[in-house]
Image 1 (cartoon, one colour):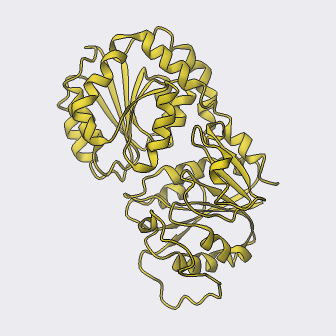
Image 2 (spheres, rainbow, N blue to C red):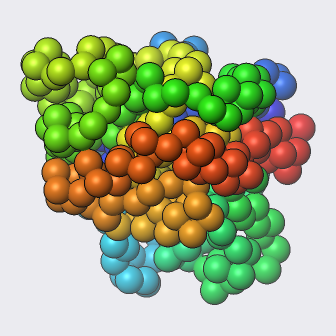
Image 3 (tube, rainbow, N blue to C red):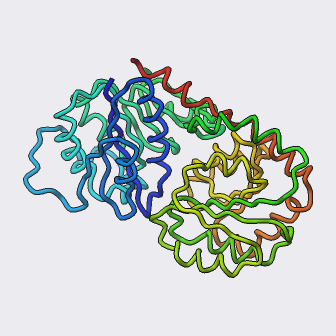
Length: 370
């Protein structure tokens, strides 16, 4: 089976879309599928990282190619401009033309698209270039013409997509379908077993692979006004393309606790399992933390993270800070009860572990025909 992923990473988009597609690609590859990616060469892209994982990547240039003449039907102007249009780096019509050249040379069984700036117009225009289409989304804010749609948001219901997809589209909605790498399920029992009366000795900070607005720096600054235990150590995880990486490293050296800044970690599941508390963004790592029952102060860094944060807070799985501007003033207060009470952390862990169990990938690939 041949599977092609159309997804992007950038300093604006972040890394989450690519990372969850890689998780799915790894699971498909393990079952004999041939996977490849189509990605635009945005600043902060992960093209070389994907290639390092063994997958071919077709790069789309930022500048419009010369002489692209592909016979595709694209109904320009037939729908509204999407809220995330700017994330594409070109028009949907141009993206169709470029992808059609690549897909025309392949016999694609499944095209998987994970991109907020693409909708049914793109999907229909490329219909002759694939057999079946899977859409990965979180927003339920635009039309799709897929055979399968996945939204791993906690609390998401198929009814949310009723206005946006054909009746024939299979909908996989909810955090039970979260695309987590197998090491999270493998470490779940170990991680949950140490949550009962664990002391707070290890704090994990994960504000996203890019963190373009330096929420990590704000967190470190706010922690100096927090009452962490004297024997606590801190691990900060960032991506290699994070624009504030150098500044964060310098700031870490001035902290009253030992701070280890790690880049492009390959053992995130082990790091989370060995941590007692996390401060993290409300992105796809939310489901990783839930799977391992890791108590979390969750920071909303984008409007599209609001539903995730709201659902997790209502379930009692996180404490929420609404936006990076809240970090400096409100993080010490948000941490206070979590630092002082192991029972509070244990209750939060129990709520979190009910939300995702790590088996989502296995469930999802059952819907992809082999």
